Image 1: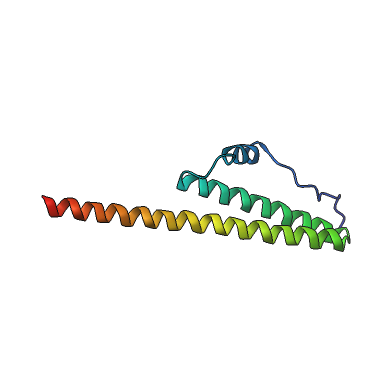
Image 2 (image 1 turned 90 degrees about the horizontal axis):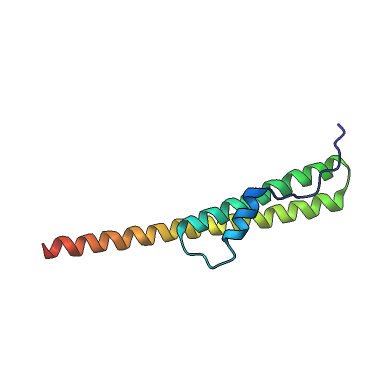
Length: 105
């Protein structure tokens, strides 16, 4: 099976928008979800580049892209976990506030 070398990772407009949105500090849970999605997209691209490198017999490029894919995946999981934990914290705070309000009524 012959594949043209497609090991270059390219960014599309959505990726650029995600990067632009993260020039500032993370403010919302949605920001963490968007950043996680960005990392997962980058991981997928590196996996595809690793596959193309393997098809081309380029072991060094395959290993490099596989490592980068793994690293991007870890970053994505980290951001997704933060989003989930922040949501839990907000839910607990809201429940505590509702409990306080019901006690005063």
